[in-house]
Length: 554
Image 1: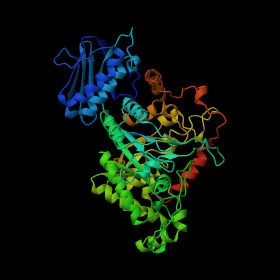
Image 2: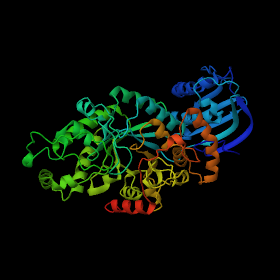
Image 3: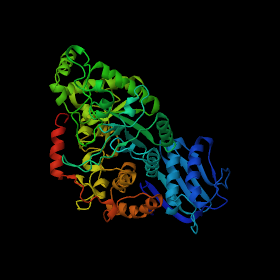
Image 4: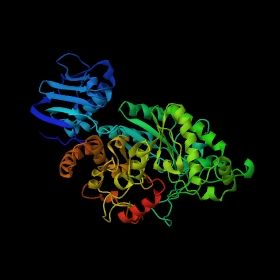
């Protein structure tokens, strides 16, 4: 028995004798319901092998895909013998994951995109039965701080699918940029999608580069990306971050900002004009809480829901400073009119309004763990991303809400990868590959019933200091391989066994062209000498997070 360097690992794998050889006679047979999986498999195997791999039927097909609903959602069974390969999925997703594993069982050169000569395309004889531990196996990608072109987003999706991850949490708006076309409000992209300059490095004294940065996705782009992901069994969950992290929107429409409305509800003739922010950190400029602002964002989310068919719609809700609301007479007037005692309740009121709108469309609100603050009357379907440690996961599950675990001290992949001096722009604590492999999404404080609310986990990639797709590669991989492994498999953790599997898996990443961080440390061109970071110790970070979550602790 061996795991054959499979990442993620599979549940049950038994070796048999012999191999199956792909050759010119190999055909792929499947029912019509799996035509999409067949097309994908042909598309990824043909370039490197040079084989036709035509559609076929009958016992001599070579590769046969089939369905058996009794296996369950996303589960599959694979049998490889010298006479052929049979993959049976509990549904289309299961068959797709079986096809992904078939690809991993072939030589790593199969991941190349042009014909490779001199390779025997042999699949070892195995029996595999496999299914995932969690329903939500995700990665969060911030394209607002640094824009990622469409073709690179598609490549990122392919890499997620390669690791049997099934959710892309797509962070589309920020203080530093608005990245999605909203046709009712065109200035969100004509003004809000670009900034004049960008901070380089961390810290209040960090310089700026003086170079404009921007970009956005048209609605046609979004539809293409969502469909491309769906064909790879990935759901794209959009996030429009409110009421904080909204300076790009306020720059585009100043009437959204605090101070744009005077006491009594009279609009200010010339509200303060902000620019799209060029610096990092938590920004004090936030949305005002006028009914007109609520209506603006209901319009935005209506268009968003037309583009994203998945169940979950992200509203952010994180890191919203309250200082402007506290100092603004109009905001205080609104709080009195609405019977709200403090600014936390005001934010909860705003999130609840969005929740009502999203729920009415048959969708589920998805937000960071701050949405638990202020006694928010969240719908039953509201789902919480617990990022400030696991306090939010415990609090949400105990209140009956589903949870996606993504604690910063375990799976924030923008954090530095070692204590070494060569890590580029070192942020926060060190999160080594071994640290990430230790990620456990289910808090031990939960009862068995409460633990059923933990629907999965995700790694979060924030791009303040990732100014290119190759830099995203460096921070994401191979740590995202570890996340994929622990979210798929419920087997006992074995760091040494994972390391051995990863050694073989890195050859696949090399063939794809992933510019991951080598296990020995950054390559010279992956370093950023002289660019200041913002490192902290685990003790410092833990104390800071504890102070943030005191108001939601169960």
